[in-house]
Length: 131
Image (cartoon, rainbow, N blue to C red; front, side, top):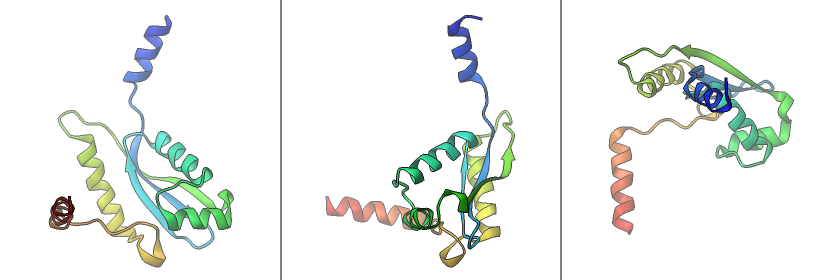
């Protein structure tokens, strides 16, 4: 195989997708998310945390205080691609189920409760009024 074929094959290869958690081993607080590329999202979160640039300030503060060895990156559930279904919508639904089950909010975790459609629309309208 030549280099172009290898690159094309790499780009066409499906990555494992699913729901993941970053678990604080010291206090069991959780951060739950989903991705179409589990390996990639773990690398991204690790990089942001090591670089002190993670958008979740509470998670970043605990990482800085406790160190990398106090956190586990875990796959909660993998999702197989199925023809005719939107992978992102399926992942969002699966993530919502895990968020409901684990409730990683406040003292239990690092997630913020998701805003309803109405709340998101209201925020957009408020933002547009300020402009």
